[in-house]
Length: 284
Ligand SMILES: Nc1nc2c(ncn2[C@@H]2O[C@H](COP(=O)(O)OP(=O)(O)O)[C@@H](O)[C@H]2O)c(=O)[nH]1
Ligand SMILES: [Mg+2]
Image 1 (cartoon, protein in one colour):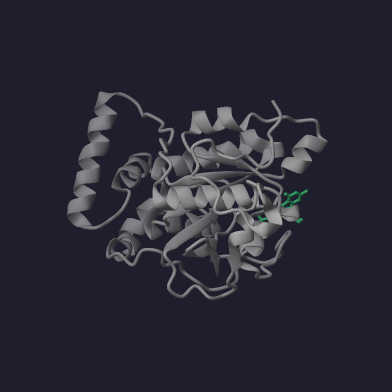
Image 2 (cartoon, helix red, strand yellow):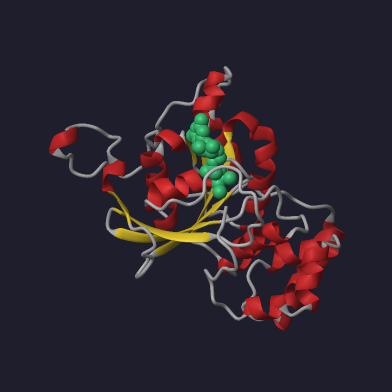
C-alpha cells in the first residue's frame, strides 16, 4: 500500500475550529505553526531531531523554526546540535538538530553527541528522521533509539523520492511494528509537516499511547547481570538516566561508554541538567 500524505490519525483530537480559509480542511495544523527562529525562551517541551546523515533533519529543522541551518553535505566536522524554537497551538518547543548518526553504538565524536543527548538530555520527544528510500538501513538507528525512549515519532521523509522509485510503504504497519507514530513526509516541499506537528504534540502531551518495540537480550543469566549492573550504576550515579541501556553497553564492552565511566562524563551527566547539549561548532 502506498503511504498516503498526510495521514490524519484516527485517534487524534479533532482539528481546531475551522478557519475561514480552510473550512473543513483537516490538514490545516501547519497553519498553527509559529516559527520562532533562535528564540527558545519559555519552551514547554524539548524535541530532538535524530537520524542518519542526509535524511532531511536540517530541512525539517528549518521548516519548523524558520532558521537557515545548513542543508546538504557538510564538509567540516560537526559536534553539536543547532537549537531553534517553534510554537504550535498553545505550546512552545525547543528543537535540537542533532548531528547525523548511523548508530548509537559506534565510537565517533559526532555520534557521541547525538547518543549523549538522547541518553542524558532526555528530550520530551525524539523525531527520528528516516530516508524512505533506504528504510532497512535507517531502521537500525530507529530500533536503537527505541531501546532508550518510547517518546518517539518516526518521520518517514523523502517519501516523494520513494514514490519516484516506485516504492510503496505501509506506514500503518510500520507504526504497529515499532509501537510509535510514523509520519510520511516530504520535508523539502513541506508536505506532511502538519501531521508531524500533530504527532509531536501527541507524544509530548502523552495523548497517544506509544509502546516502543524492545529488543530482548539473551538468557536469564544475562538479564540478571544487566539488572545487577544497572542497580550498581544507579547507586554510584544517582539520577543517571537509562542505566539499563548503559549496563548492557558496558557488558558488551562499548569503548565509548567505558570511557564515559573512567573520564567522569557519566558522573557529570548524572547530575541532571536535562536537555543540555555540548556545543563547539554549528550542527549539520
Ligand atoms: N526530494 C527530497 N529531498 C529532500 C527532502 N528533505 C530533504 N531533502 C534534501 O536532502 C538533502 C539532505 O537534507 P538535509 O536536511 O541537509 O539532511 P540532514 O543531513 O539529515 O540534515 C538536501 O539536499 C535536501 O534538500 C524531501 O522530502 N524530498
Ligand atoms: Mg543536517
